[in-house]
Amino acid sequence: MGRKRWAIEGFFKTAKHQFGLHCFGQSTKLGVYRWLILSLIAYLLAHWMDQWSLPPVLEWKSASRLALQTLLPSMVWSQLLKQIRMSTHIAAQYGFEIVLKSLPDPAYWERCKI
Image (cartoon, rainbow, N blue to C red; front, top):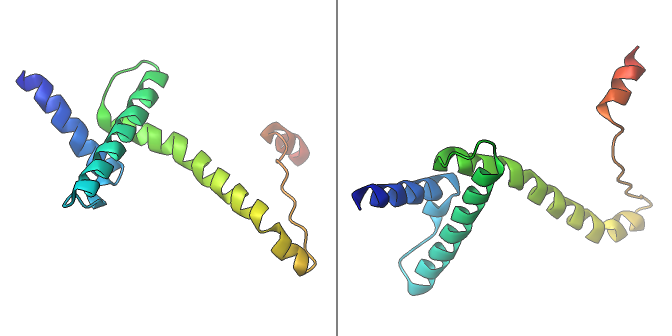
């Protein structure tokens, strides 16, 4: 029973510090509910990232770091693209056009250097 308790304590410590949950206030009932929901989301993300990695060895710190490194850039990128799409009319007012296109494959750049 004690071994399970320490695994849970280890998760909460990691969730608080790796996902920033230590910054959320827990002094009100609503604050406690928010913290519990965010903790559940952090647990699910870390668990899914751990199951996605090969071989899956549940170590909370590395699983949370993998979740942060894998999911955060795509979230930031999607929010940036959304903001750019919403702001294209501002650029058009000043006579600019915003065009986003993907870069060629890195192998293309290696062939161009020759």
